[in-house]
Structure formats: structure tokens, C-alpha cells
Amino acid sequence: MADEKTIRFTVITPARAVFEEDVRGLVVPAFDGELGVLPGHAAFIGLLGSGPVRVTRPDGSHMSFAIRGGFLQVKSNAATVLTQEAVRPEEIDSAALDSEFGEARAAMARSDEEVEAKEQKLAWIAARQKVLAAREER
Amino acid sequence: MANTRELVKRRKSVRNTRKITKTMEMVATAKLAKAQQAALAARPYAQKLQQVIGDLAAATTDIEHPLLKEHAQPKRAVVIVLTSDRGLCGAFNANIVREGRNLRNELSARGLESEFVVQGRKGVAAYRFLNIPVAKSYLLVSDKPSYQRAEEIGAALIDRYGREEIDEAYIAYSWFKSTSSQAPRVDKILPLSSMKADGGGEALGAGYLFHPNPKTILTDVLPLVVKMSIFTAMLDNTAGEHAARRLAMKNATDAADDMIKGLTRQYNRARQGKITQEIAEIVGGAAALA
Image (cartoon, rainbow over all chains, first blue to last red; front, top):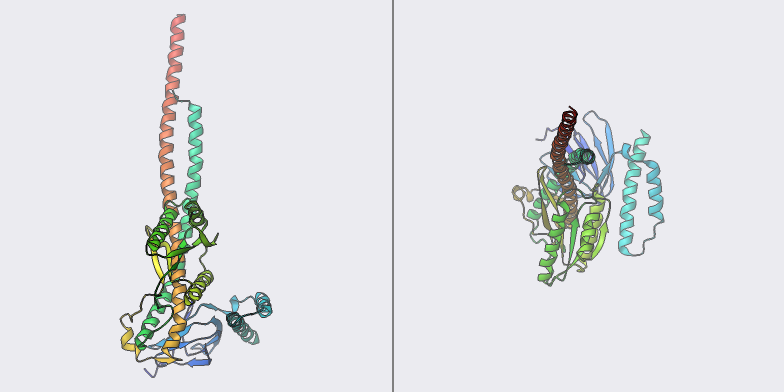
């Protein structure tokens, strides 16, 4: 099936399915960098970090949204992201995000676990900021 | 002879009650539809999670994870009990509370001390009455199950399980089978029962590319299973609460209908009796004059 032009891409959170479309390609934030998936990708399971997911639609338009951790599974030309939270840019309240960022940055982390929790929190905020910024540029 | 005015008053009061129960029934029906939808929306995630874990398990030979390991000498268990904040839903809460108490007895028979985490005011009140201490409670949230809360509860459990502070964890809730059938139920959430590749996993397990490696991925994914099982229990419980309330309110409305019918009959009989008596009196009076 090398001549596949699109790949089915689904993003699911515990509460809802956020995205389900045939796309030309997608880029997800792996735990150690970005990871691109094109149609016909080999079966794959990988860990994800927090960050923006970008997809290219069949008509060439782009769209992105933020995810918080989770993992990606690719199997028989279908990519599925399971994540704890996912938001589309239009669902992000930038003022609320700013205040969340201020709070998270000001919070004192006293132990290794707290440092890790803080970093995770900041990564999730950064993910949404990036998605928001990408939207505003356009 | 019954006093007609008294009967009218009682009938009016039953009618008012019927109005309330009828309204509550309709509200519960609407909320049930919403809760059911939420429960349905969570299903794809749970299924996919199971599938991926099956694939991962097929690819790893020696699965070792703190959440899978049974502790040698269990001493302490956490029991999460999900109830509702509001009553008027039949035996819904009583059933779950009973499950929780039975579980506590079973655990103590095995020498385990149990620690109760309760969601919902009704559960907290019931355990206070039963003199069972509640370590942590979540109030006024039974209407809105949220993954964040499930995550918070789950993360705390995982953390303490890892440090061997607790040795087992259970969740008691109302399992939502369908709109007309729910049953109180207890699930064991920790330690996770051994996972086997379910069906299709084995064939593909070897064909996957893993990044970084199956073991690390599994370490990250297993906590999600714990959190998800708490979340689905919450969703089920909310749907169950509304279904139970709808049924209870439907029964109450029907009972009120019967009562109104009975009272109306009594009232009519009394009224007729009174008129008959008055006529008899008039006729009697006229006869006496004639």
C-alpha cells in the first residue's frame, strides 16, 4: 500500500475524540523531539511529550493543536494518539493561560518529584502557547 | 364521615409532590442522556489503551513493573467508594455503601486495614453513621466526573503503592450496564492484574517499531490504566445515579397518581353522602311540617 496518499489520524483523550480525519501527514511531539508520520508508515508505538501536533490536510492546509503526553500508535495506515488532554487553538483562553503560566513559574519546587511535576506543567503550558502563537501568525 | 375539606387539602398536597417528582424525573432523564454520552465517549480511549498494552505485552518477555507486583505481606488497602451527593435515588447509595462495608470486612478478615476515600456526600454521611473513618472525601462533584480528578486520585495511589505504603486498592461503584440495569460492583485496581495480549496482539507485536523500547513505554502507559479505570468508574457511577433517580422518581410519580385517584374517589363519595344527607334532612323537615 505504498501508493496511499493519506493516513487516518485520530486523537483521543479519556473524555472525547478530539480529531479524526484522513491527513497527508502529521508531526507529533515525541518525548525526545519531533516525529513525522506520513502515509504508509511502518507499525509503530512511541511515547509522546507535551507539545503541538501539526497535521497537513489533503487540501494542503495545516492545523495544529496541543497535547499533553501520551503515546502514538501507527498500525495499518492509521495513526492514533492517546493523550491525557488535547485542545484546539480556538479552545485556548490566552489570558487564562498567561496567568497559569505565571503561577506555574512562580511555584517553588522543593523535591525532585516537585521539580518534575513543575517541568511537566510548564511543558503543557508551552505546548498551548506554541499552538496559539502558530495560529496568530497566520 | 370523612371531612371533604380535609380530603381536598390532602389531594392538593399529593398533587404538589407529584409535580416535584415528575419534574425530577424529567431532569434525571435529561442528565442521564448526557452522562451516558460521556460514558460512551470514553470508550474508544479505554479500548485503544487495552489494545496497545496487549501489543506491548506481546513484545516484551519479562514484564516487571511496580504496579504489577503483588506485595508480599499486604497490610493496608485503599478503598475508593463512589456515591452521589444527592439522595432521592432509591437504593443507589445504600447498595454501594454496603459493597464498601462488605469489602472492608473481607479485607480485615485477611488481616488488611482499609482506608476509605469517598466521593459524594451520601457516602460520607453513611460511613460516619457506620463509624467507619473516611480518610479523604470529594464532595459536590458526583455530577461532573472529570479526568483531572481521576488522575489526581490515581496519581496519589500509584505514588503510595510504589513506596509500599499501600498494598492493594479497590473501587466500589455502580456499574452501568444499561439504562434499566445497574449493579453495585467492586473492582480491584491495584496491583494490576497480569496483562495478556488479547487476540490480535501477538501477530503484530513483533512487527512494531518501538520508540524508545517496549519496557519504557509500558512503564509510562500502565499508570494510565489505573487512572482510566477510576475515570470510567466515575462515568458509570454518574450515569447510574441519574438512571436510579429517574426510576425512583417514576415510581414516586406513579404512586402519587394512585393516591390522587384514591383521594378523589373518597372525596366524591363524601360529597355525595353529604348531599344525600342534606336532601334527606330537607325532605324530613318538609314532611314534619306537612
